[in-house]
Length: 253
Image 1 (cartoon, rainbow, N blue to C red):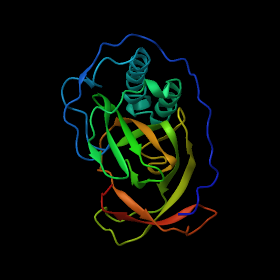
Image 2 (cartoon, rainbow, N blue to C red):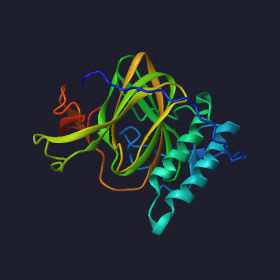
Image 3 (cartoon, one colour):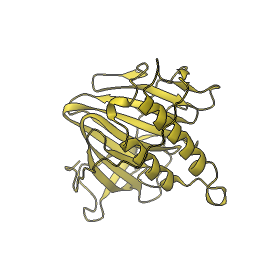
Image 4 (cartoon, rainbow, N blue to C red):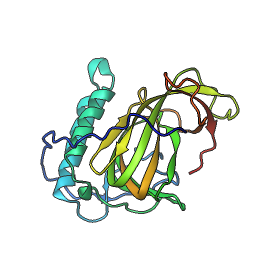
């Protein structure tokens, strides 16, 4: 792809994190082989990271739970208020020091470019850490059943978000092209965030900087179709509109 344009780095926001001691959570159960995209809800009691969590992350987890109930548990006319939820959750996350995020409990996936695994799990909400090698790329993929806030923890990574611009073929059709529109680009430095809903910016990709990068996905599972990966033509079909020709691809990290 062409170099990402219009990159922005947003300053951290202190949105007044609500403090309240949370009970230490039990160790998370089995985590699927696919990084940060496996279904983690519906597994019985709530789980958390190994060992005692910091007061700061306990407070963040409390705030996250409250936001999940307030915005995703009904909202207007019973519909989840995804954007309001994501902006509030991003503000809470950006008041959290990157060092307060629990470490990966175990590696659910690892290759020479990246490793990933759960750091904290609380039913339908969970945090997954992604460690990227220098200059590595996390392949473009969608999140049809999730809403996600991604925050930088270490190093820097560029990101780009996309949305469907026309009707795509079935996901098992890897030959037929379709159009996606680049909607958001930027740089994730420690403490900075980007986010996606099921209908906005739902596809994303990351490229680590020369020192590598560590990211965390604060993910909320809603349910729906499985995620997919895609390839994009190097040159845009329409540079002004940010349109790229895409094809579904094999799920391979």
